Length: 234
Image (cartoon, rainbow, N blue to C red; front, side, top):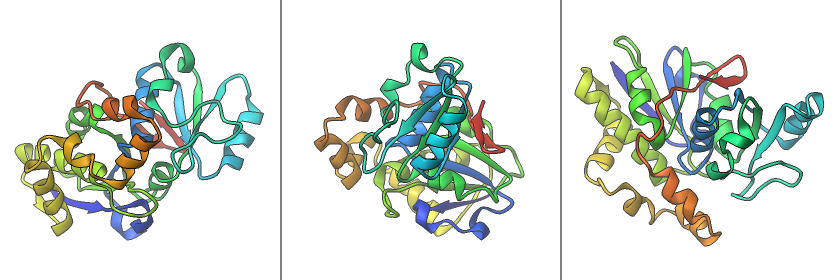
């Protein structure tokens, strides 16, 4: 099994993911939101690249669709919700379609469409993601990053997945995958090291303390969301 990584959404190229299993990660906070919303009963999540696309889908089905997402960590004007996973509770999302656009995570998903399969990962569902990988798959860990820059939190999550895969399969690592594995294995207090990162600090500055605590929970959700035909479902 060959394992590779993409460091940020802006680094994606078709050749990186073609024929592979893309594991898309945006710990803070898009994929954490998606995993949470689906776990809490959302019918599906539709990632789009722009608010305009989101508003158009809402107009088609205003009662069924909720708009969620952010720009520069803040809620988008006219959207129902921002990018806090704590907003997507069962009473809000049950049987709803969530249309999302974010600065990084939704771009990473859309940029991975050449892959054989795309799954949505976070610390919340690492164990389930690893269990979905089969012998013969070649995973590529797609870290969304922040504004096309490397982020510690996504890399730690990728490293955790790679480390566990190495306990199950005979894996061949790219240099980047090896670096992420080492980053994870030498820093088991994951939130502590991530707290020094720029994106973590920005969310902290803007008061998203509960989001940060929530997004670093490990294996609290057992499901594998996957992207197919424009929708994320389970």
